[in-house]
Image (cartoon, rainbow, N blue to C red):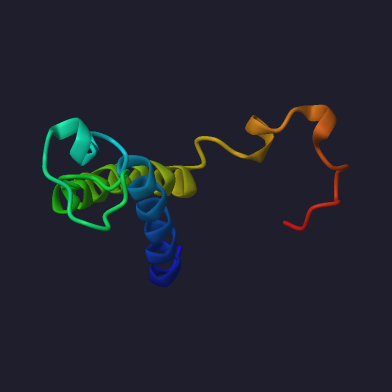
Length: 96
């Protein structure tokens, strides 16, 4: 895998992981008892902890990417392992 491709895949892992981690531990101003700013949405978090979540996202996505890259290099799980035989295309239909 070329460096550019690896960076693109890592960025995808990072982005998906960020969206999975963002809602964890979020409390609104009403839930935390903090004062709201006029015009603020009711659902706005009182302390989003973005730096902490970015660090967690980086670590989790690095682990996920390492697993992905290991599978890419060593072929632990392939197409034939995932797709049931009756759903596989006929022999010769997929380019190698």
